[in-house]
Every structure is written in structure tokens, then in C-alpha cells.
Length: 507
Image 1 (cartoon, one colour):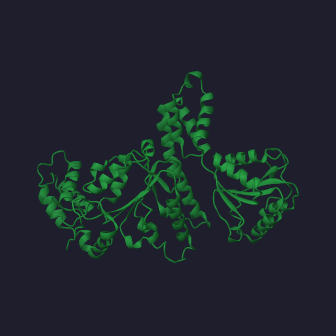
Image 2 (cartoon, rainbow, N blue to C red):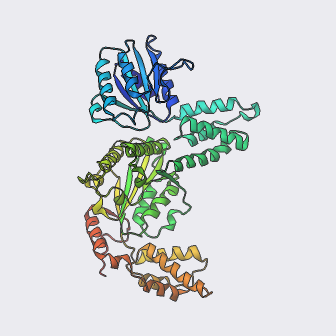
Image 3 (cartoon, rainbow, N blue to C red):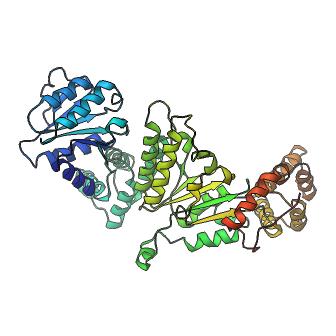
């Protein structure tokens, strides 16, 4: 936070007339600005809200300035005031597109020249009219870092009985790290919850903090905290992709930084539907020992208010960065960004802005957030998304070959029966040539349902009959599969190390 506070101080001291402060933590932001205002004793701090009008900061009983509840009247009062000051306007974004408000803001910018007056628009949503784009500077107020969370933890410990104040350095570090990504108020509530549940704050309460943190992330509605029990060994085939991921299992450690390795950026996995792309993305989190967050781009879009969609994405990415290192999983990204690179303006340009913001973040991010994206239809992805530098590697997952199909059959049979000696794996593999891993699994499930209905154990013939009764995607969508293979042959790396070139199958 110190860097942002210093930036705010520089902007205010440099007499920037209009600052847009993005934050949902009004109290922390106000305290930071109040500290800056005290540098110059003659500069007073005022706060405007739609409910109370303009009130001087720190004067709880001070009356509001007369008739300043409306945004236009409040800005007019600021413009006409001759004394220096910092004026915080909370949640002005619903009114900022009104013609009188825009005009008064532009008058304020013009009138503040040569004076010691600064207007700070504080809001969790960025909404800047075109008329003000050249006049405003945007500053993002960060979530509390380890230092602030450690101070908050000290406050809780100081209020606890003497016998409960003992906390090891390792335990303290884990409690602070577990709360990263929360606002100060959220962290305060989580620590209080741990105290209520167990009557103490020790390393043992880390799980309580994490569980509440997961709930907060889920309530975000855009990010989802995924917990997955399967390991990477439960994925059949894809040996080359597994080797690549295993090599980078310690890529986010301090040892890797000392060795001089850069932090991995991300991975794009293209391929035929049902061939394990999403599964390997989920199991990578266990392999690397990192949290897994799923970003649902569809939930980002919000047509209720202009600028809300962009704010949703920005907040989600900020949360992901704050709890890094983390894996950010985007499933079927081809659907999420389909057509975003075109010229369609059917949604007022929202899709273009969302896509542009995401690309910029991917290019400029310095935090250890590893983006894992999967796609089935590469032709739907904008070209900007695929250029070198966005991802560390692009892998192509083809339909499984014979060796992979045998491994997939063994895995799924082994999940359901301890003894699989009665099954001919080789025959099963040859009978499902052209099938994806998901289709092989569904064939097995269908065989089990049939046998269950007859109150008997399923067998080899049940599975063969179930597979024969279905037509795989490679037959029903031959053109799509062939087009994807042709594109990937020269542009992507094969996920399977069993062949030097992509298999070409005729159906």
C-alpha cells in the first residue's frame, strides 16, 4: 500500500485537480488521504456522500454544508470555495454521466488550476465519461498486504488473554498468508470468527481463515475456488504435457527465483472435446500445491450499469493477484472471448473492452498468477490472444492413441473395481478407436447401468456393446476435428509424446 499512498501524495502535492480512486475500502482510503492532507495544515479534508452531502472529515458532529446533497450542488460548492482543500466524493459514478455533473466537473478542473484544491472520486466501479478522460488520473487502492494484516493480527492477539497470546513465527506467517486477498474488514471478521470458534488464534486456526476466505471468493460470483481430489496420474496419456507441468512444479518457489528463473505466465490447451483438457488443468493445482480459482467470463458481464463489467473483471483479477501464487483457470476460453477481436458493437463495445483489459493484464502482470486456459474451437479465438508472449506454451490434445486408450481404460476401470483382471484392455482399446477419453468413460458407465438394471456384475461384452451403440464425436464432427488438427500441426506442441507428428485418422 505504501507505493500507492506515495503516488497519491505526489499527485496531490503536484496539484492534480481530478483523481479517480478505485477501492471498495472507503475507511482505509480515507485514512490514507487524511494523513496526506495533514502535510499541509491549511488544507482541509471534506467528504461528500449522497446521504449526507459535504461534511468535514473527522468532525462527526459537524453539520453538512448547506444544500450539498445533490452532486451538482456539491461540486458547485467545491468550485466556489476559495480555500485550499481535498474533496472526496464517494460513489459519484451513478451520476457522472449526467450533463450537469460532467459540466461542473470540467469547470472544477479548470477552476482548480493554480490552486491547492483536489477532487478525489472514490468508487469501486470505474466509470469515466469521454469528456473527462484527458483530465482524470486513475489510481487503484490495493487490498491490505502482509504488513497491515500482521498489524491487525497483533491487535487481536493483544486483546486475548495472556495464555492465548503465544504464537510462533511460522504460525503467524500462515495466519497472515491465509488472509491475503481479503479486505481489512473481512480479515478482521475472519480472525474474530476463529477466536469465537476455538477461543484462540494459532496455526491450528489457519483452516478456519481459509474456509471463510473460500466463501468470500465464492460470493464474489465471478471467481470460484475449486478443490479437486484427483491427481495428475488420473489423467490418461498426455505424457509430454505432464512432463512439462512436472518440470515446473517448483516454478513459484523462492529457490526458482534465486536460480534466475522467471515466473511462468500461463498455458493454453487446445484440443478435441472430452480428451482431458479441463481435467489436467484441475489436477495441476495439486501437482504444484497451489490454489485453483476458476474465472467465469460469462459472469463478468453485467448490463445493469455502464462500466460494471470492466469493474467486475478488474476486481476478480485483483483478488487473484492478492492471493498469488495461484492458478487462474478459464475453461472453454474460445466461448468466453468468441468474436471479441471483431468489430461488432452489439453490446456497446463491452466485449472488446473486457477482452482488451484481460490481454493487457496478461501482458503486464508481475504477480505469480498462472493462467490455464482450455479451448475446443481455435478459429473462434482472436489472433491477439494466441500471439507469442501471452502464454509460455500452447499444447494440442488429440484423440488418444492405442497406448493412451489402454491407460484410460485401466484408470476408469480401476476407479470402479479393485480387480480388473477379467477385462481385456487391448480389445477394449481397439474397439474404441476414435473415441475421446470422456466417451470411453461414458461407455463404461453405460455398461454399468445396463448390468445394474439386470442385477448383475458388468463385464467385457457390456462395455463393447455400449461403445458400439454410440458414435464418437470424431465421426459426427469430422470436419471440425480435422480443421483443429491442421491448425495445430504447425502452431502447437503435441501433448502426447508417443508420436512425433499428429495422428491422422480416417473415419
